[in-house]
Image (tube, rainbow, N blue to C red; front, side):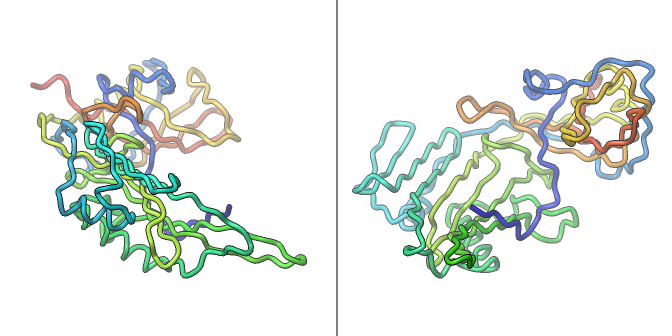
Length: 321
């Protein structure tokens, strides 16, 4: 299967949080060790860091009757095809191949259609990139998802969607025949204009459009939310202190670099800083809280060369009420 990236959303998809956030207690997080003499240089504008920021409580999201009707029509189901399990509603086609799952506590909509591919059964009339985007926006509106809640790109001028082409290539008599099987539209959420970094817990989605623009696959997690508390944010000096005190998390580094030996690091230069939101947990036990953190884009002088690494640290000033 070939996967061709058509449009990029300029955004870092790394998750983290402040000291009491679940992200900082995850066993797989790479914590930067305490080092009081670490040379940390702030060389970043501070206009992207607000003076205060909200924490949010994530809530269940039940589809309205009209949204439910729109969803069933898009997936070619009727209410008679469904089974109500109390907190979960499942739909299945008569042959058992197509399945739709709706789980309001976590805001989940999941639809799967099996693809039977062969050279004699090519998928036809898959929508173009522009058509797929148009179809996705229309569907989201029908699900009562406000397009203004979808993250914007770095320029802030267009909605932050990604479009991918999925297909297969067949070889006949040494000649390649490529068949586009679907176009996938991905999107992520923003809160107060701040990107919502969450893989499975209420702020992302993907929709696949296949033959004749018909939806072939959906995976959306989109929960309701309410403001919990407005927090003051830390200063750049306090972020630097967090790194030296071992309260920050190191992002991924290229495989060619390997692990960073922090006791021998020469310096850390912070080039950009901005807030992000994170909801912890996993698909089987998501967190009910959405909390902010500071994402720092840095260049680290390892003593053997420079490497660009994201460092995440607390953004809430816990010294203030």
